[in-house]
Structures are given as structure tokens and as C-alpha cells.
Image (tube, rainbow, N blue to C red):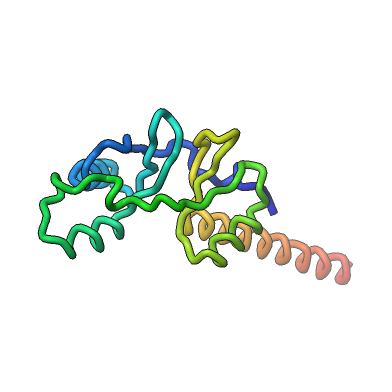
Length: 146
């Protein structure tokens, strides 16, 4: 297989750590995405998702503009390096039951991979492998009939 760098999304949308839950909701809606990397001084310190908003805001009686980002974000995010084999990233996601992995290079944000990215990669790999098998089988038939 390949490395994480082959499938990671490099253009990661981030949000500063001092924002509110309302800022998160507005940015997620504007960008039509489901998660944001939380940064402080250019370094990733957490991750916030639509699920975080839904679970942590809807269960309180507070307005989203009164809830700080640090109250709803996940501080314990998982990460891999760009050179990590894709199989290892998949295994980490399965073992930790997570949907996203940050990609860090020398402590700096280089990208992100999600379940969707992995599914697209595996689908294309299966299609390519299937096409190669079909071509090989066809070539064998042609050689036998010659």
C-alpha cells in the first residue's frame, strides 16, 4: 500500500483556540465540513467536530456564543506522520475507534485523514486490483487460445 501522505488532505481548515462554540458552528457550516483542527500559536492542540457541538451544546442550557471552544474540543487527538504506512493509520483508527487522524510533521500540521479518505483510497485500490486481475485473466485466455 502507500503512505499517509498519498491520501491526506493538505488544506486543513483550522480555528484558533480562543473562539466560541458559535464560531465553530458558523465555520463548519460555511466550509461545509464536519471537523476543525484547533490551533494555538500555529500548533494543533485539539480537534472539534459536529458531534462535539451536538452533544455538548444541546445538553446544556447555555447559548453557543457563551461556550468556549476549549469546553467542547477534544484535547486528546490522535496523529500520524506523513510517512506512516496507510495500513498502520487504518489500524490506529480501528483500535482507538476514531474517525480522523491529524498528520503532523515535526510537530506542525501537515494534513488530516478521515474515514472517508480511507474509504475512497481503498475503493480505488480495489477497483484497480480488480481491473488488473481481469486483464491478467483475459491475457491468460488469449495465450491459451493462441
